[in-house]
Length: 219
Image (tube, rainbow, N blue to C red; front, side, top):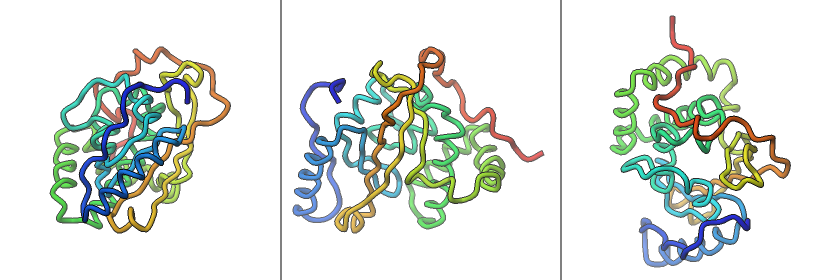
């Protein structure tokens, strides 16, 4: 993409394993940066190991955040960053609920993971988010089905800072390699749709002060 942030590609964050794995990630970062669509490599917690220039461009307008920056942990960004809705269109239904479903399933597979426990504590501290997780999420899953909650292949709205795209859509492609699988990691790419939709509301009005206001709770 022509509309990308300048500067050098950052070195990959330290990953598990040997120096060979680190070298693999360094070369994988070169591959990632050749992809024209936003792409990142994450572990099961959505901690970010690598991003490419298109990903950094997509989120260049969000404010710094100590725990929920998109380049640090994408799960926390979607759930907790007040700027998430300025980039992720239809933020609650299209992004928050699938991420909550992913988190719930991952927490069941890794019941002793302290990082996931910390995310659950933060969810509990937000009454609206907590109600959505405990009551709204099961209701939503019954309505859409477990398959619809998956990430790979899903089409979701985006609000791109490049005016050529503006309000558009992306298809999420989730894939891995044998080395990434051994590390418990996967690559997520946002493939932008070729035909952008007309620009919607002013992005400045979409900054979210709270989360998941429309999710139904148990009555």
